[in-house]
Length: 338
Image (tube, rainbow, N blue to C red; front, side, top):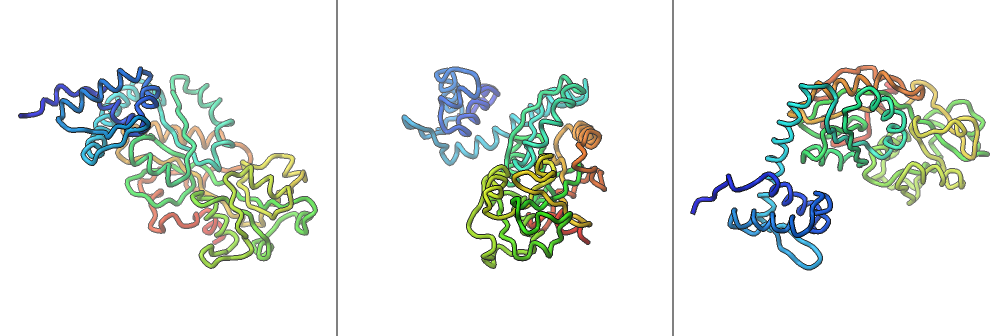
């Protein structure tokens, strides 16, 4: 018996995707702002129409069946296509308006958003920003899965099908406890870091790879100077340095004026050419709003704080975010010294 796909609604597909994401009908219902019975009934109706079971249900959770996983993957594409239709209409009416889902890496978001969001909202009051704080790999996954429209991260990254617009260069500073042998120096060099125990972020943060590159250390070689401490955030690194556990590298936007002026920890700039990380806005090449992303990137470059400078090659590129190095330490750490 043929299946009548005209009986399948976008609402049913949206509820099925939410249930797959949440793995729980109650949480999915809350995410969709409906009651659980309503969501469950719509998912069951979809299953009856298609003639297959999408989920294995238990009292505590739901799990996709093999065919359910394939159908939900196609449902995401259908929903994304409908969003593109709405986005196209909205973007033609007014630039930078309507919903925009933006991912930002966690070593940047607490320091970027406070100075970016207020002027952005003032300039584009109809823009509905939804922010997600994600590590680079997670951000790229959500871009590929159409859960995000764009992301702000450090180049290079290993991914295909992306376009990018350069935003700014953010220099790294070397941070030591007050009273450290290097604290009195005006500037440090890479040679000064040779015997230091440099505290790093945990795996998954691109800043960890960048820090290893600046220190000229190969994690695979089991460098004992790093020890076994791995922080989950920049703030943890800051407090561990203040406690005398070692030193670290911090990006410029994460530094406070007190730290620059000899607080509990001392932040030291690098002698030129200082290592930097290259921050960029990235999005899928197939996204229907490239003009909006170019406008957003231009706005960011025109509203930078004094701690960073516009990226020297601030042009959009379909290849700048895709590199064959598999996400190796950023060119911001090495190329800036060449």
